[in-house]
Amino acid sequence: MRGKAQPQQKPRLKTLERVFSKAGMGSRSDARSWIGSGQVRVNGKVVQNPDHWVDLDRDRITFQGKPLRMAEKIYILLYKPKGYITSYGDPENRPTVYDLTKEAGGWLAPVGRLDLDTSGLLLMTNDTAFAERITNPAHEIAKTYQVKASTLVTDDQLEQLRLGVELSDGRTRPALVRHLRDSARFSFLELTITEGRNRQVRRMIETLGCKVLKLVRVAIGPIRIGDLPIGKWRHLTAEERLLLGAQPAASGRAKRT
Ligand code: URA
Image (cartoon, rainbow, N blue to C red; front, side, top):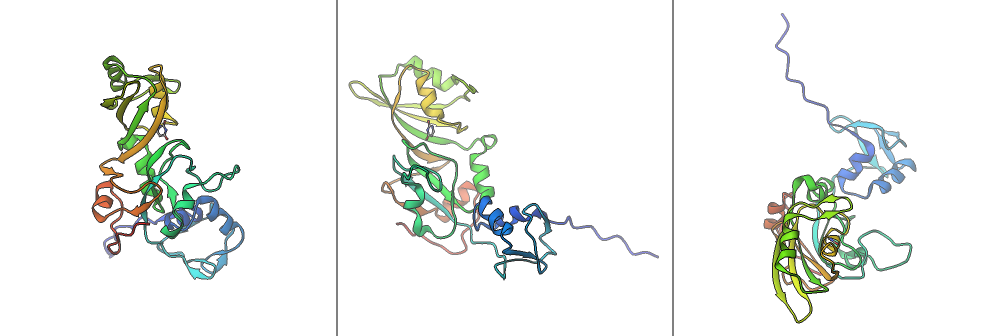
């Protein structure tokens, strides 16, 4: 008589490129170049195809002769100054957020983007699944911006922003809008949006017939920039990691630059 069938465990199949990006060691193009240049072996054999499928439970993957290991997940919060670009390297040689985070260790990618002229809270991490969750509009993670508008803004105009405005790529979702204060010529507002389309806040303000003179992102979800000095970074605290659904820290840390 045959024994009872054992429940089958689903194989954990991934492409080699995906395994590297999940390991948090580098970008997808880094992974493709390491694999393409023959630095990666699967079960002892060099594999140069980044789309090669591997079973994480059975296949032995090595990189430069050493078993591939998952890098510790790192999550940092940078107060990006205006004038820095949110990408790695720039053909025009402008300063980048990597110039400010060299000591954070390991390979980190920005979680979404801030425009060159925008300052404020930028998360950076090697946890690609976390970055995807924070930036995917389907998850409706709130991003809060403080705006200096080029004119005084009326209550009717604030109401338009709250209800959603028509942009070239469609109507925006309703926004939370607080009128912080007015000076003689300018209004200061706080907008919370859950989408993150390209230059969204600037374009929303432009629908009112005025411009953004200054834009600062002050929060992502419940995480605020607080009193972090401009241009500096710190690790997310254990509580902040929990609040954002990031992985818990292996050991407590409170480092700041
Ligand atoms: N909205 C913008 O217009 N710019 C940013 O950098 C972020 C949000």
